[in-house]
Amino acid sequence: MYLLEHDAKQLLDRHGIPVPAGRLIGSEDTIHRASLPPGPWIIKGQISAGGRGKAGIIRKAATLQEIVNHTYAIFGATVKGRRVNAIRIEQQVAAAEEAYLALLIDPAAGGVRVIMSARGGMDIEALPPALVKTGTAPPEHAALAACVQRLAAEMPGATSLALGDAGERLARIFLECEVLLIEINPLFVMRDGRWIAGDAKFITDDNALARQSEIRELLERRAAAYPEVALKLKHGCDYVVVDPEGEIGLLTTGAGLSMMLIDELRAAGLKPYNFLDVRTGGLRGETARLVNVLNWIADGPRVRVLLVNIFAGITDLGEFSQLLVTALREAPQFNVPVVARLVGNGLPAAREVLSKAGIKLHTDLDDALTEVRKHLESRSRTNGQD
Image (cartoon, rainbow, N blue to C red):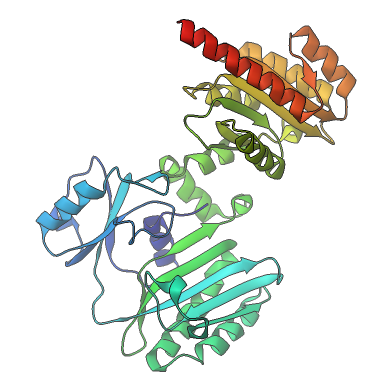
């Protein structure tokens, strides 16, 4: 889960990391000067993506009127496909140098990568490689701390002190919270070595939510800001709308296979509506998850056909097919044609169940896509006559 900056800073603050004083403002909130930290201020649109400064949704303000003007300009803006629904107003940090610090999982190295630089800010990607120091360490605090101090020793003066201290403290949080990425850019460095996390990118591991009560409570409290992860926590599957104008609803399992199917559909000139890893192994004879998925897909205004694509190993396709047919009856508002491509355990039984329900079973994807196209063309002709 990619935390919004405000939530990331609140979490870091609770763990003793210094951050600028700030307040979250929603689109319905009234801005009162008395409720804000001392000025001047930074107005920051909250989306789960980088590059906000270059996109114009981070702005400086010296007066209350400037805050109001910038807020109105930023609210509702769409950047990188994400709409700004909240703004953080925080106190500007003065008389500080900007440095950079990041810790992230490095699968190739089998450990945690530490990246730091004495220079930070919006153009960090453009820095010459010689100005960026990096190293890896096992996911243990002592090893990470040693890596941090080795890299920080190559930095000048106060920046060395700040990066060393910040790196050790963030390394502990990284491990305790089972994080995938913490990036502080800029890390504001004072002349005496004190520091403040000017911005924070914080990505958690959704699979660790069961163990991370603090992050799980944040998600439950702020579910509206993280609807996809909240949905996964509540319903036990991954569901994301990838194209609000998509025409093909997908009922699929396996994250990698589901993403590959989306790529293949797009390459074929088709428009998938959603990503889904329904996790058939967790259905356990119940239709509730399938009914929820069908209802979510039914919300797609342009969805004209459902493509079911299941590769079964442990899952019995006969049992799955019976659950699917039952779920279709329990979701009457879902009324588009169903195309099924199933491969794996229990295929003969699945073919019989689906045939009785009027659904043809395909084992070849190209054959399934041929039927998908026929349904799309048929619906287009029908809509044209209407």
